Length: 341
Ligand SMILES: O=C(O)[C@H](O)COP(=O)(O)O
Image (cartoon, rainbow, N blue to C red; front, side, top):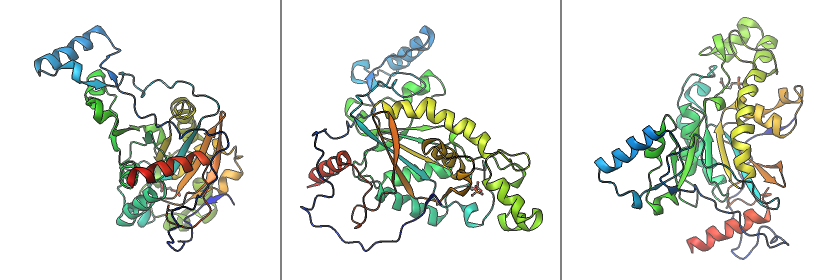
């Protein structure tokens, strides 16, 4: 059974300072390029009209264009440039923390339900477990439980960067949401919200209690709706239909950033992540039936040489455990430690 479940809470032993958790990489590869969100001089790559209105806005508000930088106004963050084959980047997947309806065992799907108190704690704990892993961009769904998980987790990241939702409604919102001073731009992490990463639509089951639904329609039928690959719940999405949008988005928008050197966090949902993991781990539609994701447990993948491979679930930095880390991540962690000394 291919399961990422919460790990036994190991005793919180702090390893001695000089103990290296991982051997340094032989090739001396530097720390993962901390390619933060590259801000550029304000360039509105859009129609002349919006450019005029933007410059009109700045002039009217006496904003000196020379002191303002913002990223290019593309609907996606910077166009990814291919990074050298040897470079390595991290991909972290986290299913949102427990939601109020998870707590009540209700089918949630696309209903926009917030985290429960326990879900908030799970998101913060997940943040501790990924606090040493570089993150340059965050992708989340348009649902609050996934967005809250990402924001809460990032409060524990040792780089202390501020996640900022990237708005892409129109050129003005793009320009305004990315107006930083030069210094600020190095202190933020762009957060891209995408409906394609939403939980699968559970149709008529949304809001129903999972146990009562199984009693009403039969355990087998409900298990089929919940865990089969291509059987949708009544007026809902099958996992295959969810994969069509979630995996397509991952391939079109996220993978290029990852392979271009950006370290990525995706905070999403049980089924949108199951479909992405099915793609990454090349699971069959039979194998994915057994894939269960616990709420709030981070899953680490490493992209290197054009491949994205699973490394396991990171544990808390102070937890004595088997680190599914690489020597590059070890260097990054040492950098953070030296930064804090
Ligand atoms: O949408 C929901 O109800 C849950 O997030 C996932 O439900 P499932 O575990 O039945 O897929």
